[in-house]
Length: 234
Image 1 (cartoon, rainbow, N blue to C red):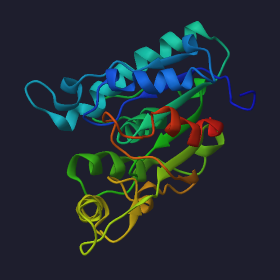
Image 2: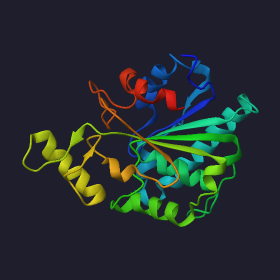
Image 3: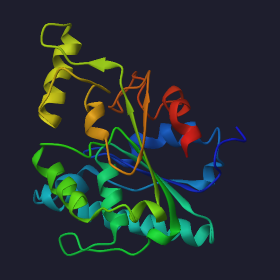
Image 4: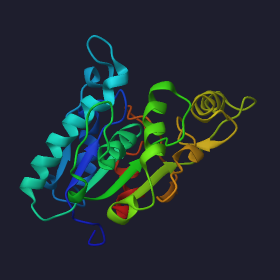
C-alpha cells in the first residue's frame, strides 16, 4: 500500500458513462488513497449527448466540468500534483484539456497542476467519427515536449481476442475492434483493441482480467480486482 502514490486523484468518466458508475472505482481506490483525496468529475449522459443533441460539443461540456473539479482539488490540496485517471474516451478529453490549445473555442491552462494522466482503455487511434474529432486534434498538437511536463500512462486489457470463427464473445469483439481500428482479429479489452491505445511518448501497459464496460457483475477497470491491476502506476 505504501508503494501507491498519494497524490490527489480525479476520475474522468468515459464517453456515454456518468459519474455514478465510478463510485465503485472510487471506493476501490480508497483502499490505497484517502477517500477525500479522490474526486469523480460530475458528468451526465446529457453532457455527452447534448440537449438538443450535439455530440460534437461533448468534449467542451465535459472539459468545463473537469476544469471546475481541477480547481476545487487544487485549492483543497495546494502544491500537490494532481493525477487524472480517465476511462475510455474520457482519456482523450483529458488530454485535450491538458494540451492548452483552443478546441472548438475553448482552452484551459491548468496543466501545471497535473503530474500524471493515466488512461484506461482509451483509444488514441480510432475510425469512429466523434472520437476521431478528438484524436485528430491530439495528433495535430501533441509533441514530445508535452511529456516533459506531464507523465502519460496508457493501460489496456488484452484478454479478449476478436475472431469471426470463434465464440459469440469473440465474434462480438471482432466487430467492436473493427469499428475502432479497422481490424477485428486483434486483442483488447472487449471493446477497444490494444493497438488503438498506443500513444507515442506515453508509457504503455497491458493488463489481464479486466473488461472495458462498467456494467454490473463484470470485472472491469474500476472493480477492486481491476484497480489492483493498475493502481501501482499512479
